[in-house]
Length: 228
Image (cartoon, rainbow, N blue to C red; front, side, top):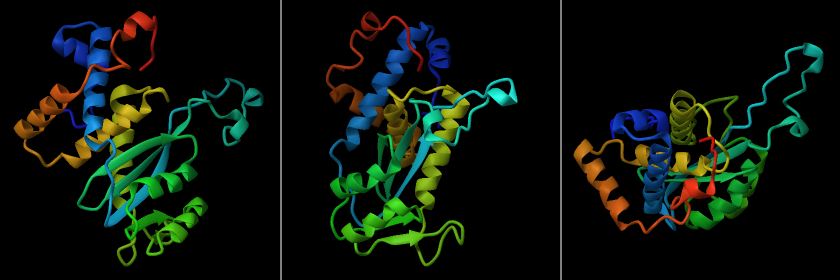
């Protein structure tokens, strides 16, 4: 509970005096349990939506003439993914992992109630939100970060937290499990004002009601090596 930016499996293993493999699976089982709290959850009222890309860093070649333009799609790593976040003001946070930020439009239609007011930045793909949510608010970050109540500051705050978690604690996160790290960050953002005892009790409750994990049961019997 005290590790607001999470714990790496190596550190957790040292703290509990268990192997890396045990700590890795335990941490992911906990993340899976936390994410179950918002499974099938919907948002309403004022909702901020945004996306940020994670993973897929391409190491540049030593010699300048051998380096590729990493701005081009053809030179991007297949591990690159976008985390799409929807944050209800004074409410819950939902996270999704996709290949393109534009997929967030369909996700908003599925998980945000009609009549809600959605706030998004100036990216062109969010234009479709205005057709689905007529009261949508837009903010152009090249002109202002907030104007007349239109902003995505809470979504940006979530990404600041998630980036520090990934870069400062885990250092490397695969696309396969990115959704679990995002769900952990969302749960911590939503419950950061809870006293430690209540947050711990909530975690235990979610863990106890979670069924046997189909993903993590017997994980190391199916995987010889893994990069978290």
